[in-house]
Length: 168
Image 1 (cartoon, rainbow, N blue to C red):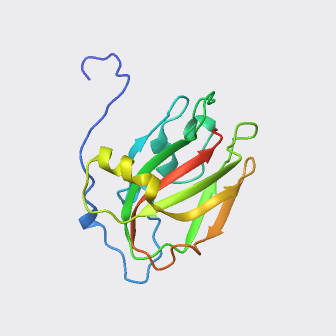
Image 2: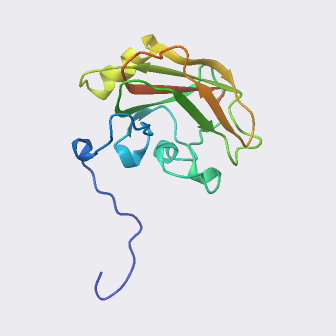
Image 3: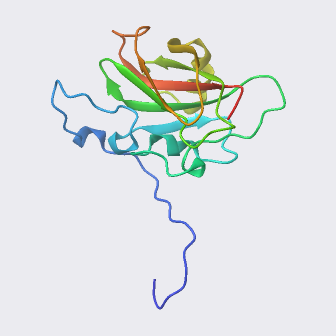
């Protein structure tokens, strides 16, 4: 900027060229990384923190560097849907609640599907019927939770829905 001044935000919108990502056939890849082309399709709540934060590399610096929802006063739960790069299988799942000490979700579930291109509205509507990748799993504060995939071991997956209960 010339001569000087300030810019509050810069946003560039487009699609990530995942066809240019080169991985070896046997390489284990983080399918949910924004660096590998994963994106948030939709979320129902981003009151305190953007959902995209959960796709960032490395450990979160603070709570604001994660996805945080407002406290729910009605029935239901908070959720987000992401697309991941196409995986032939998912072996391991990690969910981090680092820095969330008094407001972490009590438990979560993950649902997954392999979808050909659809609109985000169609994806959201169909997501309640997706198979479970991780079912009603207890979480605790300020921890990286590690799980093995037992429910959809052989399934091809390119979309994931994270449900958190009650919220956090």
